[in-house]
Every structure is written in structure tokens, then in C-alpha cells.
Image (cartoon, rainbow, N blue to C red; front, side, top):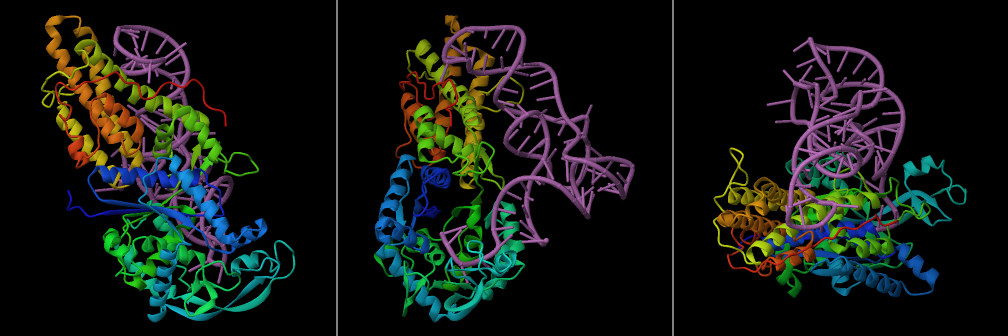
Length: 530
RNA sequence: GGGGUGGUAGCUCAGUGGCCUAGAGCCGUCGACUCAUAAUCGAUAAGACGUCGGUUCGAAUCCGACCCGCCCUACCA
């Protein structure tokens, strides 16, 4: 297992000018589930998140509040860290773009790109809105009929010197790379979107700005600051010390490169799927394995907005924690979220239904009925019984428990690794459903009334208990706390296991183990009002 | 405007390269059972497969047009 390659997964770094909301929680939770799953499978994992702190917007907000941009960034970055901690996340580092370790490496990267000719000083000319102090794109200018949307005054042609990244030079290389790596952008709909847009041709992109100063100064040209996007993208590399391969940081972390997944929201796909890979090509760094762009949560059927009052902000999320608990929240995020190309609706009613159907009625009830019978008929002590060769059902052709469960374990693990997290959760629950099925089929609670059938009851319940245990192991990445609770009640834990395959292997629950009655998810009466 | 993506039972969605008299889960209704958290199990109800036209012996599945939703359209992130 130790020979397996280390795994690296990243969230976008969150812009400190935003308030934390469900979108941040969602992306980060998905990454956390994957990171936990891979760790549980014995891989060394590096899970990175952080905050993006430069740019004109931060500078402006700070000015309005009468504080320095750094003070504003410190405050909001701290809030993000606090908030993320509430979600039970296991990130290995939290990078901030205002940290010296990041800034110094960004400069090194940029110097390399200057030297290679991938960044050059050029002149930009475009339509400028003098009131807003910003350029608008040609297409946008046309839409606006060359007038400022704010002041109504005409846009003017303006010029400035900027440093540019030679994106256009990478068109062919990117196309070849995409053709060879159809899984590079997922889901596939997003991949097509990127290909389509690529066909329009790539233009060089500016990497510096001169109309504000809150950013990393361009090496050798301090009147230019590095444009926030470029600054931000580098975080994935600077966190591992790749900007300076001789550094102690690099020695420790460079092995994690390249990332297995850059998990992002669909709105920032272009930067991650095109600009970032081109930059990596220019720097001669290996490509990430996959950019996974999820869609957005909508709320009660409508786009979230402050004016509609349906924004799922932190207090709203807390109310779900209070009512249903953190793990239920994680289950909902993981299994019901907009991981595909379609947006997903977040509604209190749906949350409640999923909680009740999946967690209370399926998982918890099964753990409860099994442990309850174990207490009742075997004084809470796991009986000795050969369950591995026992069929999961009397119907012809039914597989044995060991074959069935081990297959489910392998399948669940594959789903986790492939970032099919909802499928992983469902696959784990399939074991629970099989346990429910055999209880219904064999009715051990009836057999238990006949003392001569106690061995049969022992076999059935031993299989059930083992099934619950295996399911709890598999569900741990999604619901770490509740699964630990269930596992503890079943006399075991996932601490220090070498791999999922070992931990969830059929037969791990040994005879003589104390199994206590447990009830991990309790019924909640009514949906919370949002 | 251009590009992308989706429009299938009340809800969320499956439906590989055409044969589906269209499936699953949840919700609803009826029944069974009692180990279990009003649980579980069984049965049952429900759909013009966005619209129109075309190809075909035959289309939810292929082609065209249109309608609706959402995303992207690169110097806010």
C-alpha cells in the first residue's frame, strides 16, 4: 500500500471579498470526502484549500471600511477558516495568497515565464469605462452600444501596457492534450464546452494590471501587479513548494504533484481547463489528472440571491446542523449535489426526505435492529459463525456474503476514487439493504423463539452485524462521526487501518466482540423552515 | 448573437451503437409483519418520453426546426 502514489486534491481558493456560503461548503466537502476515502484506502493524501486575497475588489472594500487590504484579508480569511472547521474538514494545509511563501514563489514562476518568453510586455487597447475604471470586452462594448452601463457616458478607446501570457502559442498543444485526455475535464459536458470555446481561437491573456496596487508586484516592474487570477492559480503549485524546487517545502511535498482533482465550480472552468494547463506546459510541469467542474445549488427552485432571501448562508446551514447534524448535512451535500452539469435544488423538504429515507430508515434503522437483536439473543456478544460461505438470500444463484460484500467494497472504492461520490454512498447502502432483506427473509426474531435454532439465528445475525460494520466503514468518508459511533457500538473502528479493502474485508467482526445497541440517526418530525 | 447543456411518472433522475407494451428511488394509497427509530416487507396508482416535422418496418433513442431552463462568451472573482 505504501507504494501507492500520493494523492493531491484541491478546492479553489476562496475570494475573501465573498461571504462563506453553501457553494464554498459544497466544493470543500466533496474534496474532503474524497480525501478521507483515499486516506482510508491507505494512500498518502494532500488536501488543499485556502483564500484568494488580492485584487481590486479587496482593495476597494478595504478602502470603504477604512482598513488596510491586509487587515480585511486577515479578518475574512480567518472567517473562512473558522467556517470550514465547522464542516469537519481535514485539509492538510490552508494557503493564503498574501503569505510570503506564496508570493515569493509566484515571483519565481513569473520570472521563469519571462525568461522563456511566455510572458512578454505588450500593449492593450480596448473600450474603457472611465467612471468604473475598467475595460469592457469588445463583445460587451457592442452590447452596451459603447456606453457605460452605469453612467451612460460613452466608452473611450484606451491603451495601456500590460504583461501578457502567450496563451495563443499553446492552442495546438492544448488541443493535442485534450484529445489524448478525454477525462481531463469532467463532467463530459463541460469538456465539450471547453473544446467548443477553444475552436474560437485562443488569445494571449494579460497577467498584470496597473490600475490598482493590491497584489504581487511584477518582478522588475513594480508599477504592475500580477493579476489576481494568475496569482490565484499558482496556489496549487506554491503550496507544494514547486516554485523553488530546492526548498524544504518542495522536498517534503513535491511528491504530491500533479493533482488528481482540481475541484471547482463551473464558473471558473476556463481558467482551470485552459489557462492553467497552458501555464503548466510553459513551466514544464506535469498536468493535473482532472479538473472537475460541478454546477450550482439553487434554492427552492430559484437561483440564490440576496434580494429573494433564499440565500443559503452560514446561519441557514447552522440550522441544519442543529436539526439534523453535521453528518446528515454531509450526506446531503455528497449525494444530492450538483455534481453533474445540471444545477441541483436545495429545499428543506427534500433534505428532510433524504435524511429520513436514507439515514434514518435505511442505515440507522438497520444498525439499530441488528444490534438490538444481538443484545436480545446473544447478550450483545458476537457469536462465532461461518458467514463467509453463507448466501445472502435463499433465492437461487444468490452470492455468498463474502463475495457480495467484497464486491460492493471494491465497487464503492472505485466510485470514490473516480469522484462518483453519490454512487459510492449508494453502493455502501446496498449492503445495508441486503442486511434488511435477509432479516425479512429469514425472520431471526421468530427463529429465536425456538432454542434448537439458535445456531441459525447466530449465523444470520453475525452476517447482519458484519454487513452493518462493513457499510459503516464504507460510509465513513461521507459521515465520519456517525460511522465512528456505529463502529464503536459494533466494537471496532477505522483508526489505523491500512486500506479500505482490509478494513472492510468480510469477517472483520470477530466472535466475542461486544456489540451494543445503537441508533445513529433519530427521526426528525418536521422539515426545518428556511 | 455564438457555443454548451438539459427538458422522461407528484419529486429526483436511469434509459449504452433505435424494438420500451417506457424503468428506479422517494412521496401517495392498500395490505402484511413486529427484531427495529410510525421501522421493515409486499402490492398498487401515476408518464402525450418539451413542440412540430423527417429518416425508418419500427424512435424517448437518429436528423432538422422551434419553445423553455441553465452555463460560458476570457483583464470582478
